Length: 125
Image (cartoon, rainbow, N blue to C red; front, side, top):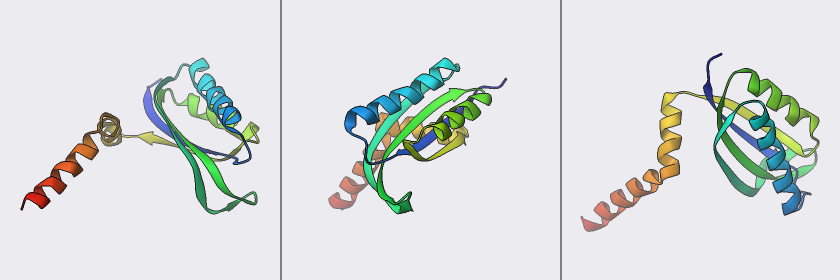
C-alpha cells in the first residue's frame, strides 16, 4: 500500500489537567506507532477558545500530529478518537507535496525569516 503524509488536529476537553492531556496525546501517538506510522512532528497548541460551543464547552486543548503511513492507519486512528470521551473533535487530512514542503519550511523557521527580511527591507526604505 502507498505511504502518504497525513496531518491530524484534535481537540481535547478542557476539564483535563496537564498530566491527563499528555497521557492522552501519548496514547494516540502509541496508536500510530503500533500501526506502522512514522510521526514526523507534533505541536501542542494549548488551550484555545472554540469558534462555537461543543458539548457545552467553549474551550479545548488543541494538538497537531503530522505523520506518514498507509491508508488504513487513518481508519484505526479515527476509531480510537471516537472511542475516547476526552476527544471533542478531530480532523485528519492528506497532505500533497506542496503542503509537505510548506510544513517542512515552517518547522525549520524559514517562514519567520522571510517575514523578518521583508519587514527590515521596508524599514530600510
